[in-house]
Image 1 (tube, helix red, strand yellow):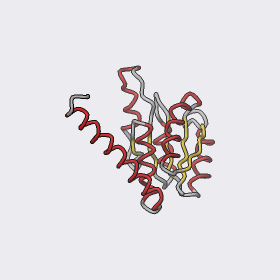
Image 2 (cartoon, helix red, strand yellow; image 1 turned 90 degrees about the horizontal axis):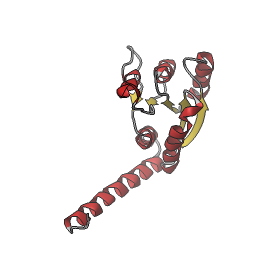
Image 3 (cartoon, helix red, strand yellow; image 1 turned 180 degrees about the horizontal axis):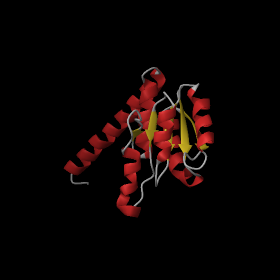
Image 4 (cartoon, helix red, strand yellow; image 1 turned 135 degrees about the vertical axis):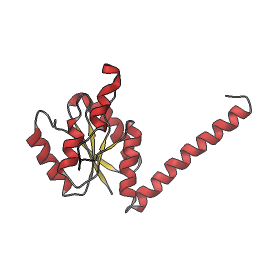
Length: 159
């Protein structure tokens, strides 16, 4: 079974992180929630990354505003890192650029929706875990089935 470590920049990111964890659970991926700011406690953050990378995890970072956490995490580990910053309307949504623009040799993936960040992490584990692969396939089939039903409803004038 895969394990995703969700690192939050602060406890204010907890609700967003819980959405990711809930979706990971549905796909058969264990998750651990931690708080460690790359700005305020970089040494603690570094130690946490080094502790968990021994287990070959996927890190999912959740930090808004100035998202140093995603780049910092990625630069310190060989494990995949998925940035899932909570977005806001402040500053016209421009804080997203701190998740998108990274220096050379720093490559966290950025996925904006919690459910999709969980899916991306699960797909990493699905490369070697047949059970997770099957859960992803069922999840995708369920989505397609809903769309087919919705199309039929619209065609019958029920939409």
